[in-house]
Amino acid sequence: MVEMPDSLPARMFLLAYDVQKKRMTARSQLGFVLRGAALTELYLDGRLGEKGNKPCVETAGDDPYGLLSQISGSRPRSWQHWVRKDHKGIVRTIRTELAKEGWIRVEPYRLLGLFPATRVTVRDPRVVKALWGGASSALRGKPVAHVNSWDAAAVALAAAGGLKTVLPRSDRRRHKRRIEELTARSGPAAKAVRKVIEAQQAAAAG
Image (tube, rainbow, N blue to C red; front, side, top):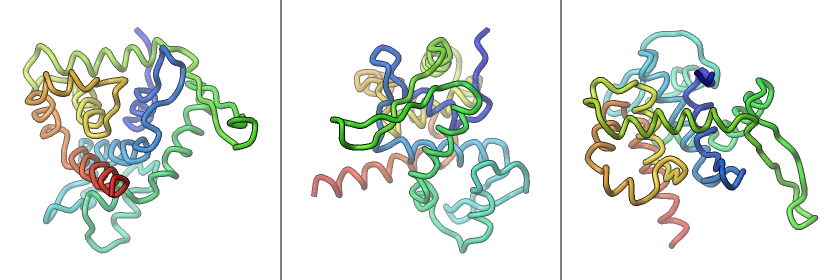
């Protein structure tokens, strides 16, 4: 049995790692996926609810990424707003957390010998493969209601964020209905991730 990180954002970070190419993928979307994962974890744990299609704090509790305090201290805002907010910061936070706990190795280097960059290496690829296996099994077999909540959320967030390491485009087409069911089960944040990324891509294309 391979040990895995406790938090959903940490798991999604590792799922964005390409084991074969030994590098991170989906860098432009990753922050949105991680914010969505943090919101989803709070929602599934009952600490976040929804009122008027906007997140609201239901119960106080562990708040490792500060989302509960941000939401409780703000006027009601959309799920998309909270997916976008601090999306670059959460990548650094989770990367540092995973490095400190020994899941990854982080090495600074210079791209083309000039530009500062960071190389991430997962220390034990079996962890990524185990996470991928859980997400893959969520697409097949047992009824959606019986799928592990975090495996369901991993599929929903991977589909929303375009993580090809988890869901190649062919799988997204083949399992479209199943992905929609897993997304509905995982709460509103995954849909918000998809909308934010679609808006970002439309703006870039324009």
